[in-house]
Length: 345
Ligand SMILES: O=CC(=O)O
Image 1 (cartoon, protein in one colour):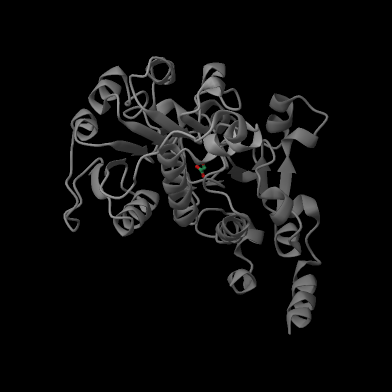
Image 2 (tube, rainbow, N blue to C red):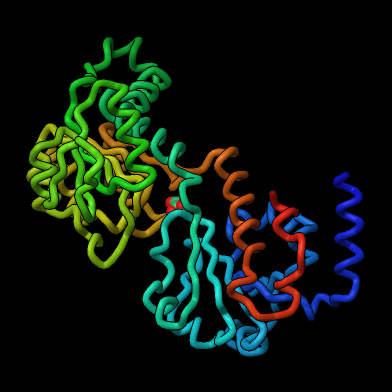
């Protein structure tokens, strides 16, 4: 059956030379490219313009394709700016292979009538597992005690210091979207008290809501940051929030590095003004402040919280689907071929 469909599909595509196909711009290889690039369904329907493979300087490359690029497939690695969109007047859709959209000028897209779509809830489970995992790791010193055993210190120095219990902790979640809600569910199961800060109080939830993140910190033993990075949330976790969280407080960040004032966080960790941190994201990735390498109460992870092989495959399917359902956005005749939804269902 699949082969039959494949053959029909070949036939329907025979009339289209690659240069006639609708063009999707990729500025840098998004992680999903290795999977979606191998999907005959997509490569026969769309021409993926890979900017990094062109011998032309970027500006010349974009100018050469300015009128034919109708969609952009991106990830956090390459920002979609107003200046870029200015060069590409035919773009109607931006698909990002990420949950975060902070690398896209959303206001410029809105003004230009360009639709933007992201990874939706594909990452919610894995992001939540990783956030709770980092919290448990910091509290119970799992990674640090692993180092202790490997370095032979158990034999030479004796028992490792005690960790701290998760049950009963008051955990403040900053950002109660898809990932935040999954974190809350998991923490409830662990016997924690969940509190939250969000743009708005969620009427259907009974967790205590704090509109002021400092108040949330003052009432929490740990803060988990999983909100979006926006102009409002940049450096929202600042000196005052750390001081409200206090000496026994732990911070976990799986959102974006810049939501936290990183210099201030490092200072607080170095001086023992907060108890520890579990960090998947940093302000200038892949650079991580070197001071953190020395601290046993800090667990570091290379921006991998949301990625598992399963979430990666789900993301690829979603991106393919989103690139495929472009008919409402794009005007080229090839965008309107029938049966494209059947191909991804
Ligand atoms: O950090 C990962 C994402 O935004 O998808």
